Image (tube, helix red, strand yellow):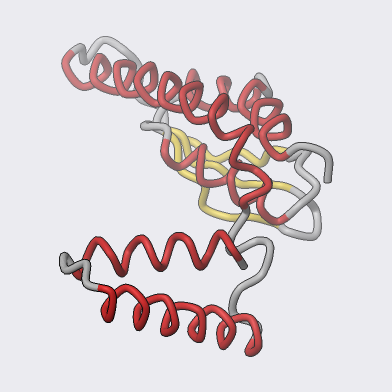
Length: 157
């Protein structure tokens, strides 16, 4: 609850641009009421505000950015060098994540990486179906490196 309050109140302050006592106090009260109301009706839960994953994100996000850069270079090369094969395909991969946050992060990480996109997430079977621009891109997913990185990011379920 505190994390959601901090984010919303920070957003309030950013958009307000005025920092008088009256606006700061009324903003804090309205944000607190909004957070309480959101929890009461059940629209915010641990999955919606995964603060417990923030520390591991400092390690995961730079790794993911590097993977995105490498994949973007690969796709760019395939565009400018027609001799490089483009062989689109679909493959199903087993995911080792144990939580909805972990599986969602895995699916989104695949989609963020140029040349691959997650088109189906099987929540019950813990599998993802991925469309790849090339066999190399799908082989990269098959290597399990991203799956392992996301599982480390997820932490103990």
